[in-house]
Image (cartoon, rainbow, N blue to C red):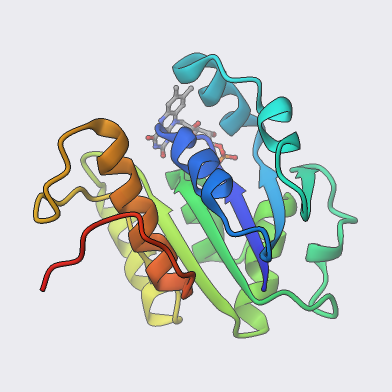
Length: 184
Ligand SMILES: Cc1cc2nc3c(=O)[nH]c(=O)nc-3n(C[C@H](O)[C@H](O)[C@H](O)COP(=O)(O)O)c2cc1C
């Protein structure tokens, strides 16, 4: 599978990183970080993003300004896209069809090519504008899957809570995993 993963400047950008770190090696990852995501990661986690991403094979990393990247074109075959976390700024641009950087362009391409897209919007509380944007995108076939915690699989640490969220996103993208205990 060729998977586009974007990380934008909302709180919890580490979830996007963790999502990438757990990805099975047979998935080819096309990764874009917004400038704000890099800033948020530095402020919240003090993480050096480049060294983290270098650890994975089968991975292509782009800057948001690299609008010439293959994922900018519908003729380049990718399968799915996820934005974790998705800022309200990027959400709004996606809902309006604005393609002013590689993330929003890749989104527009995935939408027009009718490929699977998952967004993980992060904000609290949500404004009516954000809710309207999410409803619009949902009606267009985009899956809106925010990082919402649950308690039924008995997580007792932040790490396990994050694993649960990543497992839920993997479920949506049909990626096999063993990250949380399913309800049965
Ligand atoms: C530490 C930090 C945390 C932020 N958290 C959020 C957030 O949770 N949700 C959000 O929509 N914006 C958040 N922002 C603001 C966005 O980064 C800002 O709106 C930015 O323009 C988003 O740009 P992007 O969509 O290109 O990544 C945060 C900013 C910083 C520095």
